Every structure is written in C-alpha cells, then in structure tokens.
Length: 337
Length: 39
Image (cartoon, each protein chain N blue to C red):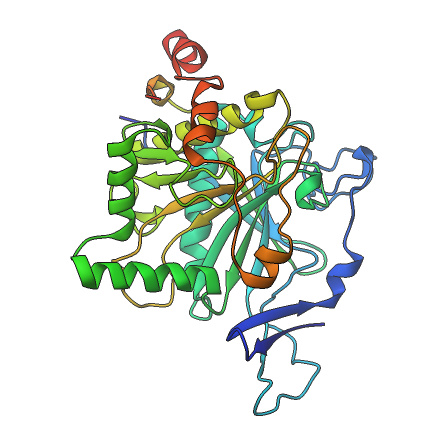
C-alpha cells in the first residue's frame, strides 16, 4: 500500500510504501535485474540483449500513477492523499560492473540528454509538481542494487527541502533584487578556497555552509532554473564537470566513494520560479576513508548539522585529488579523434 | 560547439504493464571531449 500522510507538526507529507519492504536486495550478479536479458539466461527487468541507457517504471514505487485509494480514512488533523506520482529507474549502462564514475565522457553526455528528456516528459504531466533526479551510490547509502543506476521521483507536491530553498531564494530576490545562488557562486569564486573545479558553464565547490565534509555543489554559471534551457555546450560542460568531480571523489582515498547525488531544479507546477537556480548536490557520508558521518541525534532530532571539518580544508583535498584538469585525461582522447 | 541531437527513444510496455524506454545514441563528435577544465 502507498499513500501520503500529512505530518501536522512539520507540515509536510510522509510517503508510506509498505510493499517496498519486499524489494530486491543486493541480488547475486547473475540475477541483476538491471542487466540485459541474455538468450537462455535469467529474464531481467530489461528484455533486450544490450542497450545504451534504459529508463523504466520502478517495480517497487513509492508513488505510482494512477495511485491506489489510501487504505486509511483521513481526519481533520490527519490528512491523507493518494501517492499519485511516478518513480523511475535509470540504468546508466548495460555493463554491470563499475559506477557512474567509470562511464566515458560521451556516455556521461548521453546521460545528461536522458535526464533532460525525463525532466521534460515527467514535468509536463499535470499531476506532477516536482521532478527529483538522484542517485544513491554505495552500500553505505543503502543501495539495493549494485548495477550503476539512478532514480527519478516525480512528486505530486514540492518536497519540503526544495520548498525551503524556494522560500529563501524568493526572499533574497525580494530583498536584494538578485539570485541567491548567483550571489553564492560569486562569493565562492571571489574567495576561491572552497572552489574544487570549474569549466566554462559550471562551478563545483564545497560551499561555506557545507553540512557534510565532502559536500560538493555544482552550480550552473548562467542563471538557469532547470536543465531544459541548457544549450549543447552547457550539456557537454555538465558531463565534463560531473566526470571530474566523481573522479576526484574516487581518487581521494583510492576507494569508490559512496554518495547521494541530488539534482535541484525548479518545480514543474506551472508557476514562475525565476528566482531559483539549477544545481546538483553531492552528499558523501564519509568524513574519512574509514569513518562515516551519521545523521544522528542532533541532525535528526534538531535539524542542526554538525560538520567536524572545514569546507576550506576539504576543498583543498579535493582540488589536490586527480584529475586536477582534464588535460592528461580527456584532451588526449579528443585530439585522437 | 558540440554536435546536434543523436538520441532516439523506443518505448515499450513490460508484461506487467510498466513502461520501459530504450535510449539509443549514435556516435558523438569528440570535439566536446576537448573542453578543458580549470581547478
């Protein structure tokens, strides 16, 4: 069963999805549901012998369309709604081994096109008010499948964290006449110590206010609200900077660094949100190679994050991690072509 | 300048009614790989 239950204290929706308790959990490689279906072998979720990128409705969705009628009656205090949304899985590649970091640059560029297409398609539906593209990577984050993949949740409401960002951005615009995120980018570039890498269209930084030790934000330099207004060069630049940040993460300690990658774009509720600004957030749980930062009592109970590190020092570490430029890594590939 | 569109979509219905979309790409220009990055 799946439904939205209103949290009257925090004034936000909670999604119940009891059927997800039974979802596939870390199956053996031979039974990976995201691999192509080979002749005579176990039939996976994908009935083809090979593919570039595939997107499909999640078999165990938190929300679906049309949504089932809620199993409980609402009261004046406890409101209930149908969980009328869409949950998709994006399998980045037919190759089972590896991670997003291992995709080549053209593959990464293709993925940017797929994300853009899914955002346009899902956001265009009248019952969808927000499209969240994200990836949970690594066992420490709680992935249930190792095959490189991400997810898309298309919500019937604007999620609370995004709503807070919208509110702060709107307030800043009203007060200063400027975009909050554009001001953050300018401040980070002016200071420079927290910038990890940048290219023509994007800047990646561990911002002043980072809550996780290696919390990288990728901001578009132009004031875009969504990916839909990126030109071809910006799409290529996004693939480029994603690849660099991911490589730096893995080269930091020579491990495949777990993370949550979340794309924040303007709502698709039909309203103008011109004060908002496209960005991607990375939240790796590691504070050292072997120690994790837990979202513990203070964070969960009070909503106040304690960062045991300084963004300036952690950005310095990531800047030092290879590749420091795309030079030795991709220029060679380009010049060969 | 990166090259133009090279993506095709094929949507199918799975046996249980769920939607699945294959995204297929033709070979890309490599010029976009030449972009440099400052750090």
